[in-house]
Length: 401
Image (spheres, rainbow, N blue to C red):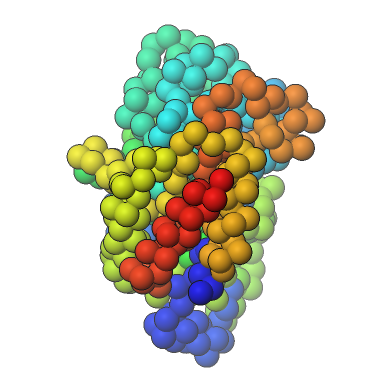
């Protein structure tokens, strides 16, 4: 039996929405992107949502908007995908990596120890769709002692007058924290809409602007939208209207807008996202139920009264094994036709970051989580029988060791 790791959910409604876009004669940024932004706004309860062409470009945009530059520091977890750190490096700033806790998310104590007068932002990461402890993080950045360290230089830094909290919500579309969307618990949250994500546009991202009262979020949306279009005052759709050719370039922007042809995929999916999420949760629950009988299986964090995961990944950990045995298990599982993965190789283990001086020995929890983690297939198309087959293959691989 061949079971892929994470195929996109493409049904007739997605195909029809894409064909409608192609037939419309308009495939770049236009009405479909705006419609998707509006539906994400409704789903998250955040009125101002800006779609872009990737999570990474969205993060670079926000860091630049906030005035992040050479000499600044941005705190991130060592246990994340490279994009979290690359966005910081692209702005000339330094990623300050800290360790995570046993639930995979950034350690609050580690953040406290890492704050310096150079700290301009924190990017917590919702690994596997499990929300970070945003209430504690937001309380921390508002403490008098932490605010006294903050050294605002740009206009937006002076307006906020504290460290900016940017949620890396690449995995967590639909996650809940204390009965509200987790994305609404930070200053700005950024979803990834990449092909493997719960909600996809093939490639894409969505920035949810949730800044405090010192900002007009609607105005910031308009400003950021211009920034995504090379600083151009009119998008192509507006320019295409008869007589609307004249435009201006008012800032040094980026070219990171989302096209309608991509938005069409997400537009069809978000209309049935409650179903898609419920199917992921069905699979997550079944995995957890089946693994309960194995003493060697460390089940991922479960939904509770405080936190609800988006069930993006099923990050199983195997007790009592090291990285080499984990890798051997994966080899055996893959031979059965089942695709599995690992999330993630900690940043300090990657060549780029090792060459920049980061050392995995400084992040023991990240290393431990990585060394025994196997990510299992979890997507709406999986049947219960396939889930049972996957669990049996993992048990056989473990027993063979």
